Length: 104
Length: 195
Image (spheres, rainbow over the protein chains, first blue to last red):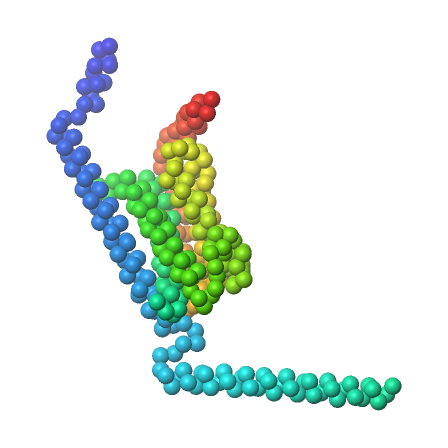
């Protein structure tokens, strides 16, 4: 029993210590709230900033209108070339069919 | 809102989500190391880990919603929750869905931790270690500009930060001398509750 009493007295906190602990906890909670708000703010700003950076660095998009026109012109040429190539291939196939027909 | 704005917001939110998720992993590792100083008590690390995780989920939701509603991709809502169900970049997008589903499992079980018990919560929480690398691979595979210098630098910084924290965690071991005794006590208490 005597031992129990001494343990109880040993772990008791003075009001001064308790107030200090409460103050420290409140300060830490304030820090947590500030850091969380800061992270949220930086994240929102980050979405905007990285979105803009992404818009400027996306492959195939250039800032000057002249370069954009050139790119478009190149694309048109490629498509046209593709059609020509396909047409040639069909013609060649047809010619080959005629030769086979003549043989039989 | 134009398609272009949605597209850029998707990518901005994706990059920010990656940074936030990396911060969550690093803070999680720091909290297991019981890091503290005079001005930084231990519960601050745990609290920040939880708050940043919730912020990350919000930005991940923004990333997903803007991608789904973007008329250019025509993704629909199903690929946002069911992995590998998208016609568009099926594998890479599916990995993102897997990472998101794992993260949701981790967040939800953390919110109901008091009801499910420590062992189940801890087991599911380990999924976070799987979710993060899958998210990184999703970013590298799906991202239109994943290999542009700025995004590559951001990804490398995140990977290095997480790698250092995990390496330090493995090197330092458990800083809690009573960890095994505490774990045994928890398991015994849970078994008793189940009876």
